[in-house]
Image (cartoon, rainbow, N blue to C red; front, side):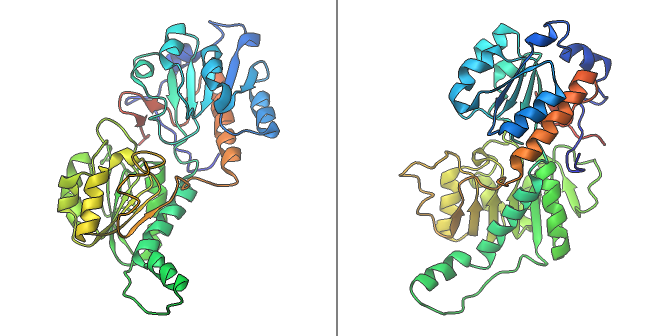
Length: 353
């Protein structure tokens, strides 16, 4: 497994015997009755790989088309349902034991009924961290080097120099130091940046970060940053965290990059900050509503780059997700700690320090 797959525990100690008891399917079903339901774009070789990890199970590739009906019959679910699914009925059926999200974000499955249930949840944190970090840099340098402006000039056959900004040597703030945030710090470090960060666990080691604070330190760190990168999960605590108050304390001329979830920002507040010039520019790979409505003010906002949630795209994405899932299947069956085990109350994995 890649070193970027982070191992997590729930609470402060490894779940060992309790985890084995909680996730054991043998006490509930015959092995031949175990159904693994998939809702991510697997191909034949991925299904075969999963089947080899759990030979006795029935593996069903439901896709988005059939996930609503197949979820009710699942013992293990792996994927990301982008359509409405019957979570309430699934929890009441008491068959589903484990959700392996195929995304780092968990807002698609951490509904209240799942949170309050005994269903175990694990995330794909770190699986696509390389791609998200790469896309973060593309958005940041696209803004700072004025790439959209120069593309417009090219379309008008203009060859005019314009002022640009430097990412190299700047002060950056990473909001959320999970798998994606840590990889982003690794990528930014060679650019001689001064790295600030906030995280739910500010006491854990973060050797590349010059100053690490907790969520309560966000407004103290925002005024110091030339670039702000949002890589935090969407939870009740982080929803709308970048509002008019947060934007007002940012350094005039700051650049805001969001590669996490659109719900972290208040759309109109960001548009107002761009229109006033308080924000120099912004790059969003995610938006509060996807796609934005036709009348969304984001479309006409000045100096805003929007990409359609492609930060985690990679031709190796499904291979890597399946590798993680199969590793976790083996751990699951052996009663060993699962990689990226989620603290459902908090809404994200808890790192092992």
